[in-house]
Image (cartoon, rainbow, N blue to C red):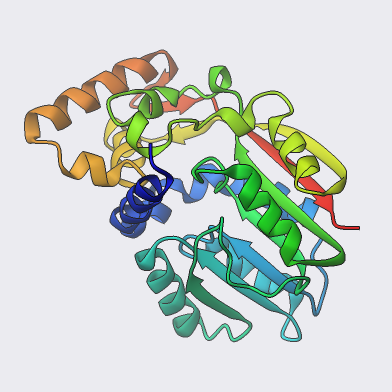
Length: 269
C-alpha cells in the first residue's frame, strides 16, 4: 500500500476511535505502560517527547513525574486524539504539557531537544518503523533515552484475529512485525541507539462481556473507520467471527484473552 494512503487511513481511523479509546483500552494497557515508564526513568525537570500520545493519559503521568520544571510534548497523527488530550489538560489544569498533531515519521521537533522520547504502542502502525525510530533518536539530547512498547508475538496475542481479518490489509499490514523476536531491539540499534535492552511482558486482557470485547476490537482502535463503513450484516458477521476466535478464553460472561508486549529502551551517545 502507498505509505501516504496508509497514513491517511491511520489518521482517520484513530479520529473515529478517539472517543472510545480509553473506555475500552485503559485497563488493558496499564501494565505495559507502567513498565514502560519504569524503564524510561523520567527525572524532575526533564523535557520529554511522547509520540503517538493518543488521548494523553500516559502523557499526564509523565508530566507528574517530571514536575513543573519539565515539559512533555505529546504528538499524535489523529486530530481528535489531540483535541481530547488538549481539553483534558485544560480541565485538569496541567500546565507542563502541550499537544500537536504530528506524524511519527516526520516529527517537527528540534534535533537534540529532549531528554527522553517515548512511544507507547505506536510503532506497529507506522509505515516505516525504522524511520520513526530514527526520528526518536534525532530528537534526543546526547545521553537521552528512547523507550517504545509494541504488541508482542502474534501467537501470544489471543485477540490477533481482528488484525488479520477483513480489515487487516488496510490498517496494519505488518502489525506484529516489530514484536517478533528481536525486531524492535534491532530497529533501535539500526536507528543509532546504544545499550539497547528488551523485555517481554505477558498480560491477560480482561473484558467483562462480549460487547466490551467487540467494542475494544472494532470501535476503540484503528479499524473503527473500516468498521463504520460496514453495513449491519457485515458488522454482525465480523463480530461473530471475532467472538468465535476468542471463545477459548471465555470466563463466565467475560473473556480473559492472552496478550504480550515488547518494551525496548536505548540511549543516544
